[in-house]
Image (cartoon, rainbow, N blue to C red; front, side, top):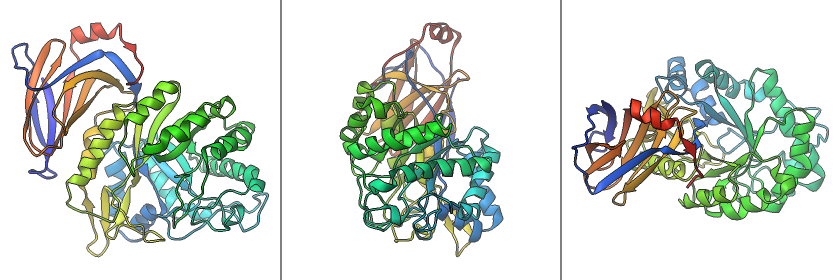
Length: 460
């Protein structure tokens, strides 16, 4: 018996659970999918989001403790989204209350390094998450070095890292990781710089591909190794897909830099071009691909359905082109889409409505649920051959406990009949317009025999 869970625009956020039977006699529809568990691709790392100062401050200072605990459970418990990835900003980001760093101006030896500000809001939130998810992987990302280390003497408006501070800035990562370790918070990975090609009105710093590669091979990589932190995964780029090739290829082609690089991080802004992931993977199959930021820009849109559809579309397309995990942006924002120290308001899967002291769950939360609750870390993506109308898409994984998870999105304006075929048996369904459906398919004894000869192929 095949279990399915569906949500549609007509039913809004309500889920409907049904079951399907597979049979050799079921019809083949125009929308047809052949799933081949024998061919496998990337292993799944997990899902997660960013614990920003904005998120932690809002829940700690402006909402009831019951709401605070509800949000932690909604994201990190097995009954919630089952998140196991977290992104933290090193120094301030735009979703901080103000610009800040961990050192006093002019400190060249990092003698004044102090992360006590994070102990007020961010780190207690992290520790609560750790209580729910003992497999939590933490990624750190800087938006800007301290102002005195930069060419423009400003944490905002771009600027570059001064050459004389490259070694000091590399040590800054080391110190931050070590300080977190002292607080029993282990760092799994880091990105070199958030959005290194964007001059923003908020915290930002510019690197060319050459400069990022040089910083890694001459400063950051050696600093991590010397400090015994060579197990920390280093990710480059951390920006948009449109120019990921021209930014990642030069660094990954430089053996001296590439030896320190685990993979490439990317965001969804500007353009949706997932095929660039396949191209990058084909060039560097031993490197990894991780989505590290995406959100709905322009402020909150409670009740909107298309915002959740954007999440599903990007998750499916990116996963089908080799992405190994998904980290959303802010876990929570207030009803204005902040706080943000430059007014760059955005949406989040959960909004904290401060005046009414209630939590608003957006469609994005429920769309993510259809993936993160079922595609467990360690799951492996499997091959599918699909003939589908535009706007109909899916992705398929095999979980560690031997289930096939198929997530299908119908973003069209029409209901769609669809047939799925696995191991010469078919099941059929009618997908409502603007819906998302997750199928849980037990692996049969015959399929288990086939899995004995499973071999991984290159990501396509």
